[in-house]
Length: 143
Image (cartoon, rainbow, N blue to C red; front, top):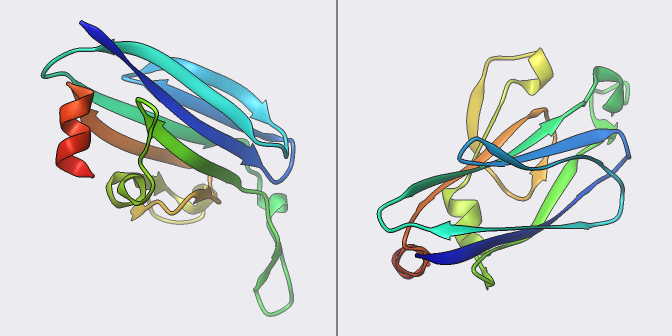
Protein backbone atom coordinates (compact mmCIF):
# COMPACT_ATOMS: atom_id res chain seq x y z
CA UNK A 1 0.00 0.00 0.00
CA UNK A 2 1.10 3.55 -0.69
CA UNK A 3 0.11 6.83 0.91
CA UNK A 4 -1.51 9.98 -0.40
CA UNK A 5 -1.83 13.48 0.98
CA UNK A 6 -4.62 16.03 1.16
CA UNK A 7 -3.54 19.65 1.46
CA UNK A 8 -5.43 22.92 1.39
CA UNK A 9 -5.55 26.35 2.96
CA UNK A 10 -8.45 27.81 4.94
CA UNK A 11 -9.21 31.15 6.55
CA UNK A 12 -12.19 32.95 8.01
CA UNK A 13 -13.14 36.59 7.74
CA UNK A 14 -13.51 36.68 11.55
CA UNK A 15 -12.07 34.57 14.32
CA UNK A 16 -15.25 32.94 15.59
CA UNK A 17 -16.02 30.40 12.86
CA UNK A 18 -14.98 26.78 13.33
CA UNK A 19 -13.71 24.47 10.62
CA UNK A 20 -14.11 20.73 11.00
CA UNK A 21 -12.49 18.47 8.40
CA UNK A 22 -13.17 14.75 8.12
CA UNK A 23 -11.89 12.02 5.87
CA UNK A 24 -14.26 9.07 5.79
CA UNK A 25 -15.83 10.23 9.05
CA UNK A 26 -12.52 10.51 10.94
CA UNK A 27 -11.69 14.03 12.16
CA UNK A 28 -8.42 15.33 10.70
CA UNK A 29 -8.83 19.00 11.70
CA UNK A 30 -11.08 20.84 14.15
CA UNK A 31 -10.33 24.42 15.16
CA UNK A 32 -11.61 27.96 15.24
CA UNK A 33 -10.09 29.82 12.31
CA UNK A 34 -8.48 33.22 12.28
CA UNK A 35 -8.20 35.64 9.40
CA UNK A 36 -4.82 34.33 8.19
CA UNK A 37 -4.66 31.27 5.98
CA UNK A 38 -3.99 28.02 7.84
CA UNK A 39 -2.33 25.12 6.04
CA UNK A 40 -4.20 21.87 6.57
CA UNK A 41 -2.46 18.64 5.61
CA UNK A 42 -3.23 14.98 6.13
CA UNK A 43 -1.57 11.81 4.90
CA UNK A 44 -3.24 8.41 4.80
CA UNK A 45 -3.06 5.05 3.06
CA UNK A 46 -4.01 4.85 -0.60
CA UNK A 47 -6.08 1.69 -0.89
CA UNK A 48 -6.99 0.32 -4.32
CA UNK A 49 -10.75 0.39 -4.95
CA UNK A 50 -11.35 2.47 -1.82
CA UNK A 51 -14.03 5.16 -1.90
CA UNK A 52 -13.11 8.29 0.06
CA UNK A 53 -15.18 11.26 1.22
CA UNK A 54 -13.49 14.49 2.26
CA UNK A 55 -15.86 16.67 4.31
CA UNK A 56 -15.11 20.33 5.04
CA UNK A 57 -17.63 21.62 7.59
CA UNK A 58 -18.26 25.20 8.69
CA UNK A 59 -19.74 25.71 12.15
CA UNK A 60 -20.52 28.64 14.42
CA UNK A 61 -22.11 31.14 12.06
CA UNK A 62 -24.87 33.12 13.78
CA UNK A 63 -27.58 35.36 12.26
CA UNK A 64 -25.86 38.52 13.54
CA UNK A 65 -22.74 37.64 11.51
CA UNK A 66 -24.52 38.75 8.33
CA UNK A 67 -25.23 42.47 8.21
CA UNK A 68 -27.77 43.71 5.68
CA UNK A 69 -28.56 47.22 4.50
CA UNK A 70 -32.11 48.54 4.30
CA UNK A 71 -32.48 47.03 0.80
CA UNK A 72 -31.48 43.54 1.96
CA UNK A 73 -27.99 43.64 0.44
CA UNK A 74 -25.18 42.03 2.42
CA UNK A 75 -22.73 44.70 3.57
CA UNK A 76 -20.73 42.58 6.03
CA UNK A 77 -20.51 38.82 6.43
CA UNK A 78 -18.42 36.09 7.98
CA UNK A 79 -17.30 33.31 5.67
CA UNK A 80 -14.68 30.59 5.38
CA UNK A 81 -12.53 30.50 2.27
CA UNK A 82 -10.95 27.25 1.05
CA UNK A 83 -8.00 27.54 -1.34
CA UNK A 84 -5.26 25.52 -3.01
CA UNK A 85 -6.82 22.06 -2.64
CA UNK A 86 -4.31 19.36 -3.59
CA UNK A 87 -4.28 15.57 -3.70
CA UNK A 88 -0.80 14.08 -3.64
CA UNK A 89 0.68 17.54 -4.18
CA UNK A 90 -1.33 18.01 -7.39
CA UNK A 91 -3.55 21.11 -7.37
CA UNK A 92 -7.14 20.13 -8.15
CA UNK A 93 -8.07 23.70 -9.14
CA UNK A 94 -11.28 23.65 -11.24
CA UNK A 95 -11.68 19.88 -10.74
CA UNK A 96 -12.40 20.49 -7.06
CA UNK A 97 -15.06 23.07 -7.90
CA UNK A 98 -16.63 20.79 -10.52
CA UNK A 99 -16.85 17.75 -8.22
CA UNK A 100 -17.38 19.16 -4.72
CA UNK A 101 -20.91 19.76 -3.41
CA UNK A 102 -21.86 22.32 -0.77
CA UNK A 103 -24.82 21.28 1.42
CA UNK A 104 -26.44 23.82 3.74
CA UNK A 105 -29.80 25.17 4.90
CA UNK A 106 -29.09 28.92 4.94
CA UNK A 107 -28.19 28.66 8.64
CA UNK A 108 -31.58 27.20 9.49
CA UNK A 109 -33.61 29.81 7.61
CA UNK A 110 -34.36 27.77 4.50
CA UNK A 111 -34.66 24.34 3.02
CA UNK A 112 -31.60 22.15 2.69
CA UNK A 113 -29.85 22.69 -0.66
CA UNK A 114 -26.97 21.05 -2.46
CA UNK A 115 -24.99 23.48 -4.58
CA UNK A 116 -21.69 23.56 -6.40
CA UNK A 117 -18.85 24.91 -4.30
CA UNK A 118 -16.80 27.86 -5.53
CA UNK A 119 -14.30 28.36 -2.72
CA UNK A 120 -16.29 30.23 -0.07
CA UNK A 121 -18.60 28.90 2.62
CA UNK A 122 -21.15 31.50 3.71
CA UNK A 123 -23.45 29.21 5.69
CA UNK A 124 -22.96 26.53 8.29
CA UNK A 125 -22.79 23.41 6.21
CA UNK A 126 -20.60 20.87 4.49
CA UNK A 127 -18.50 20.72 1.35
CA UNK A 128 -17.99 17.11 0.26
CA UNK A 129 -15.60 15.68 -2.31
CA UNK A 130 -15.82 12.01 -3.21
CA UNK A 131 -12.80 10.34 -4.76
CA UNK A 132 -11.32 6.87 -5.03
CA UNK A 133 -8.08 4.96 -4.82
CA UNK A 134 -5.65 4.52 -6.27
CA UNK A 135 -5.29 8.30 -6.17
CA UNK A 136 -3.06 8.56 -9.25
CA UNK A 137 -5.72 6.79 -11.32
CA UNK A 138 -8.52 8.98 -9.95
CA UNK A 139 -6.47 12.06 -10.78
CA UNK A 140 -5.88 10.82 -14.35
CA UNK A 141 -9.58 10.11 -14.86
CA UNK A 142 -10.86 13.38 -13.37
CA UNK A 143 -8.42 16.10 -14.35
